[in-house]
Image (cartoon, rainbow, N blue to C red):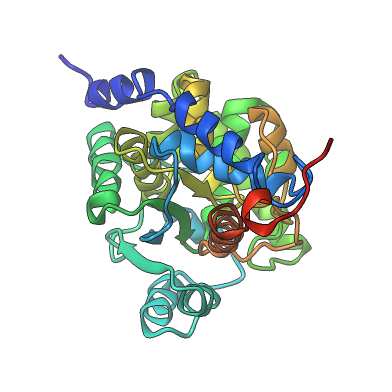
Amino acid sequence: MTSPFADILDLIHIAPMGDDAAVAAVRARDLTLTKPAGSLGELEHLVEFLARWQGKAVPTIDNPMVAIFAGNHGVTDQGVSAFPRAVTAQMVKNFTEGGAAISRICAQHEINLRVFELALEMPTGDITLEPAMDDRMAAATVAYGMEAVAGKPDLLGLGEMGIGNTTIAAAIYAALYGGTGADWVGRGTGVDDQGLTRKAAAVDRALSRHKDALGDPLLILARLGGREIAAMLGAILAARQQKIPVFIDGYVASAAAALAHAINPDAIAHCRFAHRSAEGAHGRVLDAMGVRPLLDLGMRLGEGTGAALAIVLAKTALNLHTSMATFSAAGVSQRG
């Protein structure tokens, strides 16, 4: 019988390459701008990143979008969060009504915000007792996440909302990289010491219950993952096919990228990691993937806030690249 993950594996293993000629064109123009070569550092690299994965000598950020995927988790029954599960739907309403931090960032900086609710009334299975999803549900949710790029954004930021999902992310990291729950959990929404102990214990019980399936990243997703993580994986894969560069948010969003990376490291080459979260062991996750975050602001809110700020940074970088005067136009002498 064909695995429900067969098409997903194909997308992870076979992905369009970046455009070296577009990067060369960006570098050539950069040398003509009224500044010392390389003096804008990471801002210059961001424009190259956009050019490579959009396949454009002159990149665009005309239709940037942050996509938030929201899911609920049965593991919250284990007392792993400081907030009740109902808060997920309440925050989704806050996103759409414009009251959340991500809503305000996107409104201020003209970034489209889309929120995808993933069966909030049907939490995934409690991973300490049963699989989060069956394989078909996990695969279908990845496919659903691919629809996030239907609006053809030219730059995509990925974020999430889901009470309990830092526990889910910690379990995924422990399955991928080894260690115990205590190595990977953090305080999430602000649990106390007892809550932190419950989180670590829940991860350990989940790892023990599902140990026979944890050698395969897509089975890890099904046994331990949340719907929002599966959907973010789908968005990452679809963005590669559509030549859309991606900014990954923080601790939970990085779990989707980590699963793809575990199968094929090149599958996330079109992604940049927006920031190093203050949550848990996010820095260790980034190190495990061999990636460097753009920002380190001590943030741990989630909901795509770090990804949105990375988009703001990219918009600034691109504006400098396209609108700065050249040496010849400004009558400025170049280096001899």
